[in-house]
Image (tube, rainbow, N blue to C red):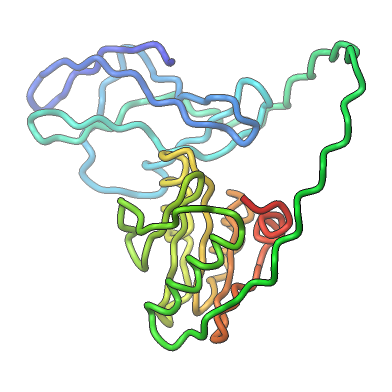
Amino acid sequence: MAEPVRVRCPACQREHVYAPAELPCACGAPVAPPVLRDAVAEPVSARTWADDWVTLRCPMCGRRDRWPRPELGCECGTVLRIPVRSDQAPAAAPAPPPSPAPSHIPLPRTAPAPRPAFRPVAIRTARDAVTAAALYLRWLGYRDVRRADQRPSSGVGLAAQGVIAQIEPSVRPATVRDVECLWLQSMTESAAPVFFSLAGYADAARTRADELDVPLFVLDLAGVPQPVNSPADELIASGA
């Protein structure tokens, strides 16, 4: 866990002890924003992409990625943005230590049993789109699919153990913000994100999904989700 620091609210002068939350890197290592000691927290009056995200480097694999900037809610109602040190300069990944010789030769993994053919439902309404996505998640191997506890900013959210899905059943293509919000929620809940859209995705949304490794599917009117990026193809191949 990251070392806690003292943060003073500039609005009411209350002092808080704050420790930034750790989020998992793609390699699995925990990453915590390096909070600047003795720096003054700033009240959040307006939100922009540059202010809400910070570039951090994983200490284990050297991967640089965008992470949500830490915030703290004071009892007086002020939301404080915690100053952190951003890693803007490119950094090379550290050389991995030599691995010891294995004491035995591992046996090959047994191939999983093939899944039966997916049985879709035709999509005529928004409810049908949600049903089709839920059936597809079960077909991938996720059990106990249910409505997500946290409602997304648009569309409908589904959840199961290990996965958070968002379904956009409208005629509006999904946006960059939709993809980023789903990814952020998945990081918070330590679950894999999956996005289903009836009208497809904006070009910028597809690019960002590739960067964040978010699988994207388009729902056709027959109710069959079609993969539109590599993470979606990989999810179909591996399953839950």
